[in-house]
Image 1 (cartoon, rainbow, N blue to C red):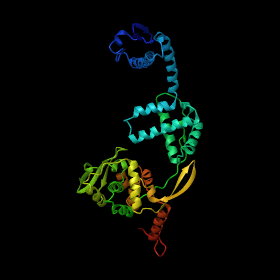
Image 2 (image 1 turned 90 degrees about the vertical axis):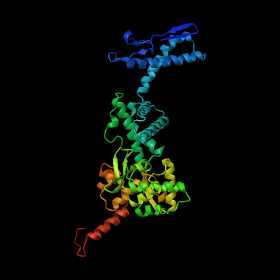
Image 3 (image 1 turned 60 degrees about the vertical axis):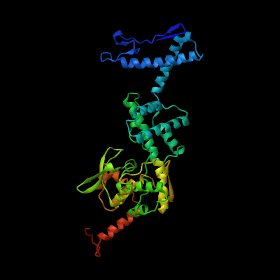
Image 4 (image 1 turned 180 degrees about the vertical axis):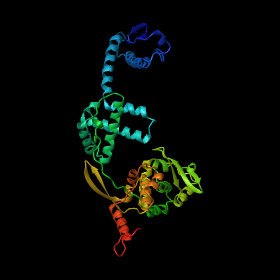
Length: 404
């Protein structure tokens, strides 16, 4: 490596040995050749050394270093960089950041953002504890401290804390697959189990959907558009990422029946959705091209306001779990309505109508009945009343069961 500046020449040996036929004087790099596979690693090292040399020369230009010290400074700085690079190679957070950078554009943006958030949480935890997280540190002691941090500092609910720990586990698995550590503890049974609780989410009944659809919002166009798009979700059973982007190109007709042909963003699964009269009314209103999508955050705010104006304000009781402690809360129903409630409303309303789960799964895109039934939100009162009606219909006056 050579620096020529103001008539002064300084050299430093990189220590690399390359056969002349594989060296390019034009690029100052090893040539790419199947017969010389070492070119990749050699060029990586040369780039690192060049970066260090440029940093030194910039300091010379600023009067912070002397050119005559080039050889000794390079030796010192290369040793320092090597040591610190080896140290960084054992650390979880630098690896996770590098991993995410490589995966950008290769995985769904929502998934990428969720993992990015987890990296931010790990950084906060590292600052909180004052300890640098090495791969070998991810053990049961880490789990106990991290969960306590998620509950007491971040105030996460139990389910979300579990998802966060699962993402840490994913980073560890990816690093292990690359041969960066041999820590098996994160992959043992129940390592990412912090306990989960089934939460009841609010859903709209068919009557409430009708209530929303008949609400006059002509004087508030932004709310009207959000309401209509939300109802499209209620009548299609799709995710926000799918129902908010429907266009006329999704409309198909099979055997005289109008359907929506949708390839779901999250799963890349193709589903066919019958166009119900209520759905057709909304789509026709916009000539089968829905309003341009807005941010999910703004959309959720609009939907809460629309539901409030529609009088969907009956008390909604739910529980949260923080640090495995249950807290019972009651709030007006409209406060808990979000874009994803549309999909749950579809699953629940049509399931209660008696349509088999298997048929509904073909529309929602769920792979298993277990997954689908997690979307069916039936509280204890509804379940008890339905069961009582079945009992009443099943027993004759002679108290014998009869087929229905």
